[in-house]
Image (tube, one colour):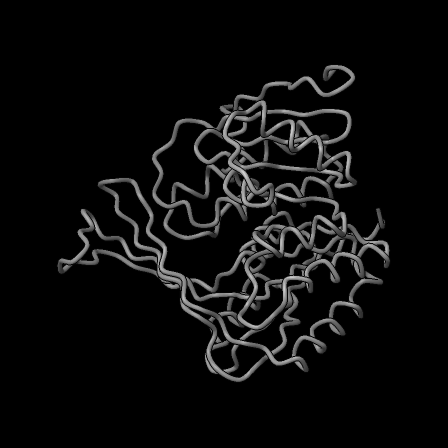
Length: 322
């Protein structure tokens, strides 16, 4: 790994997240919003903001609509994130999160994103390529905007690796398949995304672990499978762990997966062991779901939850963890 500390996040399809609190949400009826907040969002944007809490040097790129970019620019300025986004005509999409504290559920309404032209895609690739000489790791996170082929993700992974940077990927569907074929450093599918990739349903922890091991043998260095409220599985070549988060009151699951990915990237930069990274990532992800938005005020407070995280060794092929 490069000794420099800069990280770059790529968000191809960002969104302005509108989180609305609606107790007792009832479809087909008039519902009252008792609280709401707007956040500059998208997986890579959320991850960039989290990485800054670790006092790491972070740049962020992707596509932003030029008509409503101000909320993103404010975030980047306040968090001291280097803004390398390619502006395209139109408005960045809205993502509505309806939080129901009575049922402890989150309902997502995801709008389609803007459709970048080929010239915008080429401009983004040029931005990324220019950053790689000074970047230790790149994190590609989130869905693809309309019109962008899934193969772009695999091409980005290959380009980043060829320049000597590590590459983390958190996406789904054909984009995840494209990434895996290019052998990124890290992937984080959830159970449904792993099942979609495999073309069959996986549910048992043993089966999930078996498939994660196959991905490690294929060339991916780190595989994390998020199991929702059950925790997560963390697998590398020589060791593997299951983590169970502390019992907490869930307000919103928005940003939980992003916190997991961002914490793992930060842990890598801090040279933490897989066990340490797994406990930290699980704790920070748990802290995020106790609030309405994806941002954390303090990493220190979130890490206090680490002592409440249960972590278990998993026997890997050819032996057991030490």
